Image (cartoon, rainbow, N blue to C red; front, top):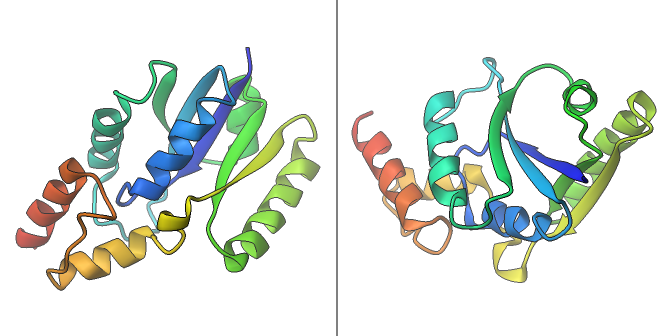
Length: 161
């Protein structure tokens, strides 16, 4: 069984993330969507909220998706869970420069774990979680950037701050 992981903070989950998740399920027999535990990073959503949002939004894509959390080195998590490939989404050249560095380091640390890059769809190339949060804070329309469920959660979170 080929197990892959798509790691990220998913704060918030976007249509770009969902596109990569859906396409990765065609490559892997099982896809783990791994939510990074990073207490140093200021997030809009709590760790638990991000897990719940992912479970809600990924449930209809494919039954071979598992939502998990992890901390520490990604390659250690891969080894411990028999994961053979890391899925990463690319939007622009700047993503590639960052991602190729991480992929090279991961290959050095775990030569048996491959990194696969998937280009985002054209309509998602500019979408980032940071931009979604900024547009939402200023009450802009995020309906083409995130699923309705996520949009509602963002609006609830921003109105309570």
